[in-house]
Amino acid sequence: MEQLILASASPRRTELLTSIGVSFDVQPADIDETPGPDETAYDYVERLAREKAEAVALSNPHQLVMGSDTSVVLEGEILGKPATQAEARSMLTRLSGNTHQVMTAVALVGKGQCQSVVSVTNVTFRQLEAGEIDAYIATGEPMDKAGGYGIQGLGGIFVTDLQGSYSAVVGLPLQETAALLAQAGHPVWRNWSRR
Image (cartoon, rainbow, N blue to C red; front, top):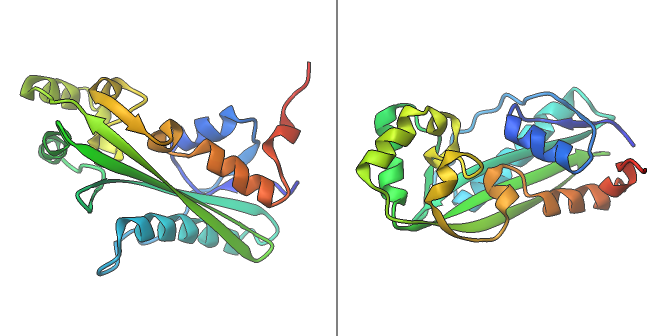
């Protein structure tokens, strides 16, 4: 198998990809992540995943390159990573008691082709108290995460319902990722160690 390159600096994506037995190098992509005018959230995450993979593939033409992007979407609006505690508080207050979508795209570039898929998961938050929002923000956990929370961390206690892929909410839809690799001729199970 060609060496796989993950075009992402996300430690969560690294952990998830490792968890299914894939060996890879990490080479983060540097692209403009500004949404286009009238671009839907679905199209936005797919484009970013594809552009990340394609950007890294330019300097690694004989490798498989995987790009990914995650957006938290509430009523059609993309909630990015909060830049300030006030932004985190605003996001969490808006998510409180509501259902939002987490859209995670994965793109795989190899041999001059790009295949991509988008996973959409519905996540419902219970009603949050102002004090717990403040306590959560004080931990620092919301500050590097789309939508201002991490389901795999302390923020997991806010979730009352999830319809879709848990791993996609964390940052990489494992079933879809494995399917893309299999379509490229590299099923992940071939790398699993045997006892």
